[in-house]
Length: 477
Image (cartoon, rainbow, N blue to C red; front, side, top):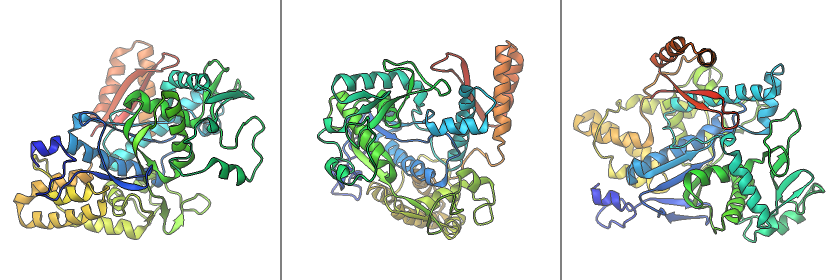
């Protein structure tokens, strides 16, 4: 692809196969040409994990799907022109409950910190082993409480929200376009309500923006009392902070269309006075395990960590690249049946492919044609299989094959994290913090260097609320 082609990725190239990126937009239910607001700043937001427990295999699907899209956008527009934000929800009632269960002897704030740090660290380790790139930004909800309070205050002032019984709620009838993403009609929701509407709500579909916290619950001071945010307001504020009031792509799983994404749109558009929050909405399909809905009661609930490190699925551990390829063997919008047979098929394919090399070669036009057609990874894998066969016969093709494989992310993960003892790492990170507090700089540096030698990178910062030093860690890749 020429430099001119890269500069105008959506130009209709009649003399070639690649005609620009097209995506299925949930907002319009049609496949559309992707035209970014600015070629110099293509922006994407994807809902990330709520860190109360290790991420399950269903959580892995959107991370992998939108990692491929991130790679593709980087190729089409240049990595310096693409901004990808994926959040971490670290304030949630499920987190509170897990903290009380796992650390009943600790003050709640300390217990919550232990749960969220351990879970977030494990999430980073797991998705690194799945070959996923780091997003440009990974905001945490607790770092944006001030922005949430400000947006809620704006919604109240504009008449889109009201205070009732210790809660601030969004008034869904104040937004005529409410339901545009999910195609749900408010009148139909009222008629179909099966349970009594909470007495303090004006309308059945009204949702919480802010709720009061008891003395035993985490909370922040606000004009409406000490409390904590509702789930939906978090993503509205974090996406606006990093991507602006209107951005290009918002992604996530089908299960988030309603109510989460619908409510994000309502909050953001009403607060910011815009007709849209994101121009394109993309959603991946559901995941089943061996033909059944995944649930703990069915005994078929598996975390990414278990699939990678335990012999709980199919009687063996599965390499991260196998899990990734198995996910991509079904089109992202289709439901996927995650099975041992599928993993074995992915493993057989990988065993026939040569190891990719570092290369400056361009990926094949056929790979680009597949991926720019609504991220058709099924067709792309078929092309890659053919390229692998050609590369095996002709070493000169290895560069094209490797560049094509990089777009799918099906390449060996550089950092071997299979034997990571996350508990030991957490303990040493905590010990280093204690050494820093005691001003034992040499010992703190020794622990940092020891972890670095094991491929663990430490990031020091300050808690947004308390100002205390905090340290997170990640696997270097």
